[in-house]
Image 1 (cartoon, rainbow, N blue to C red):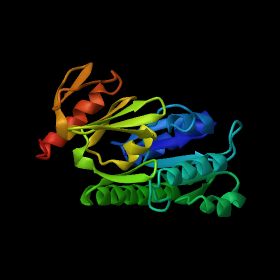
Image 2 (image 1 turned 120 degrees about the vertical axis):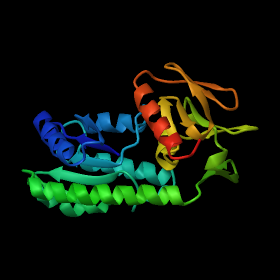
Image 3 (image 1 turned 90 degrees about the vertical axis):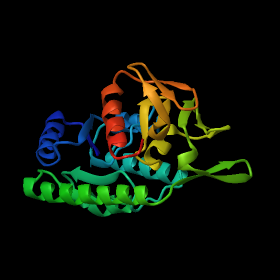
Image 4 (image 1 turned 45 degrees about the vertical axis):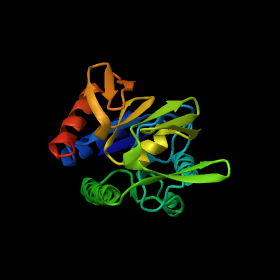
Amino acid sequence: MKIAICDDEKYVRSFIRKLIEQQEPDCEIVEFSSGRELLRSQGLDSYISEAIDILFLDISMEDMDGMTVAKRLREAAKEQETAVWGSLPLLIFISGYPEYAMEAFSVHAYQFLVKPIEEKEFAAVLQQAAEECRILKGRRQETPRELLIRKGNTTRKIPEEDIYYVESSNRKVILCLSCEKITYYGKISGLEEELSENFFRVHKGYLANMKYVERYSRTEVWMKNGDKLLISRYKYQDFVKAYLRYISEGNY
């Protein structure tokens, strides 16, 4: 599970990180000091995305307020035809201005916490959000997944299991199947969230289906169709853990 904290005050981010680590020690935590930095990480400002499961978001920030950030995230979900309710990330506002609470739920916030943060309340909200996140991910795993691809006036369904890997090229994504490659305008960030956990982001430009991994080194991943994908040195250890967990579950 990946949890993000977006607040322009460092001591607040550190405090929230400490509370999360006490309750969810195995999760990955990322911090953002501004709304614009967060949007860049999500591929909404010409950068590459890292999928987030739970987002703790401040409202009053200098460069871009949290409400604007939330609206951008929800607009992106609609563009990718992702359900806003019951979709990730679960959005939890943390603000010193309780009067924003009603507006927060207009962007489908999961919860609203008022500063100063009360530790017991925070723990209860995080527990509920983590359980909801696991339920949502479980539903994704149970349901056979298909991608709905639109090109021009045609629509095509692509079974997830047919995809060897996804490549990002400029503003396009390339689905690499066994016998063809499908190119269309889109963001690899959206696919990273939409596809199951069988897919791992080995590099900012590649999303690999672990079902078709033949072997790997510290710099490359060999797929069963013969293609080689670059692997980021920052992703290598996490990829190895994810792949070993994948094959230990009998998927190899």
